[in-house]
Image (cartoon, rainbow, N blue to C red):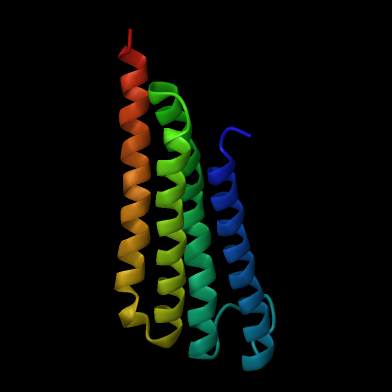
Length: 139
């Protein structure tokens, strides 16, 4: 498989999201918030928002991850795109974990984790865009 590392990062990101989804289910029971309610105990709401915010982030992160890897490999050949995109993807996952822990503890402290994952996403997007444009004009 050409993009094994990006595939692994994709799977790890999805496992993280499933973990967050399970956290919401556990929090529903712990804080007495039956489905489909999305509000109640403030701690439940924090756990729920972490999962919802991550879902919103995945919509941008996953295509950017793959487009970065594919576009870079198209220009540079080899596994350069796989290595760079997967490294940025790993940074995104770490940022999301930091974000989750901080948000659940104190929502005001989520900035560092958010910043880390946002920077990783931005770098993936910009790299993909630059390499796609470059490939359009490459002789």
